[in-house]
Amino acid sequence: EKRNPNEKEFHQAVKEVLDSLVPVLVKKPTYIQHAVLERMIEPERLITFRVPWVNDQGKVKVNRGFRVQYNSALGPYKGGLRFHPSVNASIIKFLGFEQILKNSFTGQPIGGGKGGSDFDPKGKSDLEIMRFCQSFMTELSKHVGPDIDVPAGDIGVGAREIGYMFGQYKKLKGAYEAGVLTGKGIGYGGSLGRKEATGYGTVYFVEEMLNNQGLSFNQSTVVVSGSGNVSIYAMEKAMDLGAKVVACSDSNGYIYDPNGINLDTVKQLKDVENKRIREYVKDHPDASFKKGSTGIWSIPCDIVLPCATQNELDEESANLLIANGIKAVGEGANMPSTLEAIDAFLDKGVLFAPAKAANAGGVAVSALEMAQNSSRLTWTQEEVDAKLKEIMTSIYRESMQASEEYGISGNLVAGANIAGFIKVADAMIDQGVI
Ligand code: NDP
Image 1 (cartoon, rainbow, N blue to C red):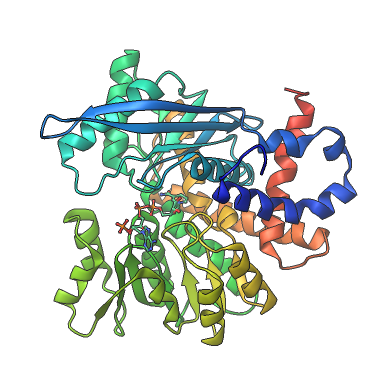
Image 2: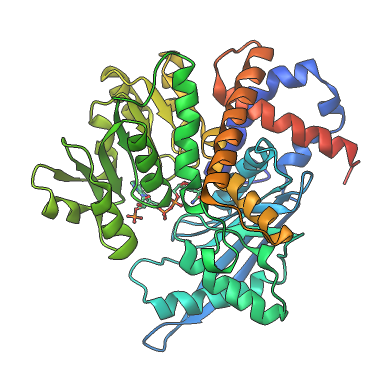
């Protein structure tokens, strides 16, 4: 804390990992001798930069850009860009740190990174978004490349923003380096199945965890927070597997539909019309909207998938869910549950799929996009989806196996941290003190 003052999200992420690594360090003191943890916690590089742009009224605005190039032991830095007013060094470092371990157990050759800006895309025109993205990439282009650092989307950054940034990178470099960004449009190097990958992958992971206990999504009642990229495709896959999804949200509040959420309406509102989730009730008279997004956790259900943002599910909400008979939690967002909420779930035997493992499907398919770009091939949606399923199953098995090996059977939080850590730590030792 002394070295990184006032970075509460970063401290929280590191604490969760360190707590679960104790048995590993006891069993393998070589990690202590090589100061692997100290090295892993310190980013290789943290870049911050000015992003000036001109709004539609001709006024000059200035935002701050970030890129943390955290760890390159396993491959080029890889991780998304987040555009949200809450973005600061603590948030970017927590996301980057988690990304190292997550990327490690996808089994793909990718290191860990993350970036973004405190720019707020809400209410901005298309041209303002384009000018901001161009200015952001003008600086970022000095630090990224297909074999150096490969950003992707995250909150506030989807295919449109990736397109504008890709265009600017291409113009600055004078070369078509398709592999510099992932999450690109399908027409110019994007991978089929990428936009669905995080949400689908979360549900594949949770289904594996449920099946292991003789349970399944089929005929379960599910609550999913958020209504962005991850939420929409988590809802879609949960419904495919026979679940009834009754609620979703945005930062203003949540909707509850006792008949089951109509996903076409949500997609139309969010993907096409850029509207708020409260508009849903206009087309669905049985549904209701309530202000305040945390109220969503008071809805009785079998499974929750928090897919919005960090720390959206606290201890009080966890206790409410437990009292209402929750069976499983699958984290689609990054660090959506507080440490106290995780403890409450684990104490009460609720099945818990932690973000690092459960939402790794997005970055896994991003790595498949990089593979397609460098081989100049395009895989079908079915091929990508089959690979995604295989990767999520193997992440589940590896996390479970690690939890068994270290005497905490079924604790996937610790299992995932351990499985991710060992691969990176071994590679760091092999590569010497750098
Ligand atoms: P989007 O920007 O597409 O969607 C975010 C959604 O969450 C929006 O509906 C937003 O509503 C809502 N939201 C934000 N804050 C809150 C809140 N406090 N309460 C309720 N809803 C809220 O982002 P993504 O879907 O891409 O990302 C969601 C999460 O998943 C993030 O934690 C991200 O890091 C993580 N993730 C994303 C991956 C990806 O592939 N996209 C990969 C792995 C992890 P509003 O419009 O009101 O802001």
